[in-house]
Amino acid sequence: MSTVTGLRQASRRAVQSQIVAIAEDLFVAKGFEETTVDEIAAAVGMSQRSFFRYFPSKDDVVLDRLTRLGDDLLSGLASRPLDEPEWDSLQHMFDPVLERFTDDELREHDAAMQRVIDGSARLLAAYLQRLDAVQQRLTDELQTRADSRDSGSTPDPIVLRAKVGAAFACLHAAICHVVARDDPDQFAHHLHHTMTALRPAADAS
Amino acid sequence: MSTVTGLRQASRRAVQSQIVAIAEDLFVAKGFEETTVDEIAAAVGMSQRSFFRYFPSKDDVVLDRLTRLGDDLLSGLASRPLDEPEWDSLQHMFDPVLERFTDDELREHDAAMQRVIDGSARLLAAYLQRLDAVQQRLTDELQTRADSRDSGSTPDPIVLRAKVGAAFACLHAAICHVVARDDPDQFAHHLHHTMTALRPAADAS
DNA sequence: AATTAAATGGCAGTGACTGACAAATTCCCC
DNA sequence: GGGGAATTTGTCAGTCACTGCCATTTAATT
Image 1 (spheres, each protein chain N blue to C red):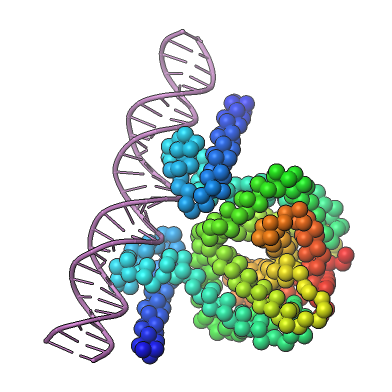
Image 2: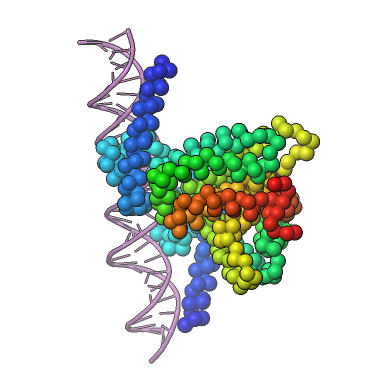
């Protein structure tokens, strides 16, 4: 039974990937808002109703990858040593994402998607909300790590949340700059430089 | 003529305020998503079509106040001394907002609205996007200030954007905590504590 | 009172999204 | 390979946010 559902889920994911691939092309060509769900469904070869059985909304076609990003960041953060300053853990949490960017094709693709996101206020809003949700997950992980460290001082959960938010502010600033200037190979450098400049005095280097 | 348009704009603002007041009651009572524009329009005593002549979207009924918040923060930031460290300017930029919170009634009202925002994913997304736009305006102001200071070193625009984002991360974390714990009189203290903890080492205290 | 400008309402239409139901497809066991 | 169950799919109707268009009402000006 588990192999059956496994196969079904694999098939489902394959369809989802195909929808994403076709829809992204349409979004890049015509823009997000100007592409209707009917067009996407027709291009894929299914009814609009079936499209909504694979994605709960048009937004999710673009933003589902943020779920995977959140997973990657979470496992990256969890793998950092417990005695490391939090700011260093947050900084190195981004390392796997940066590695992904060494591939030119992937990098250009992500840049194009970011341009699609920036081109639609509605999509940008949903994007920021997903990032917010990821930040909350990471904050919980940071809290758990601090609790398991139990070195007397209990960290303020507000400060933890703000630190995660600050790290993402560095990420967001670097992304926006790189996408605006179309200069994606400097991304890792920009992010590192910004996170170094923003390191809280309380987090010893 | 200018007096005529002035009167008209005043009347328009009065109608907008009435719509906001009535709609907020409905949102608090039934939730944002569960309240239709038709209901709001009927409660105010106008057609749906006229509602959309006063607000471009249902979101704006709740989020228009962020425009004023942005203006206040911008003027607050602009009034800070040029030789002040940027983190201090950002921290004190929030002072007028905190003063507004000394009024119990206003504070409770804002907390209720924040709960409405948190209750709708769609509205939360739009809220975060508005905050993002405010941050961009503040970054531009910070850039202008740095340019007018022209003390040799040109600051990195990415770092400036990230600093503004970090300050808003402190604000956001404090707001979320206060709304979740229903403990709004500690807000100023939480914000100050968090911004102190997040102060970048590069910004001397 | 007549003219003109603005606000309003009604209506039809679009696009995202949902629930319900029936037809088609696939899966599984014999 | 066939029959029955589970799953997927398409169709249809409906809701809700939002827009353009046009006729009507309301208000301001002279």
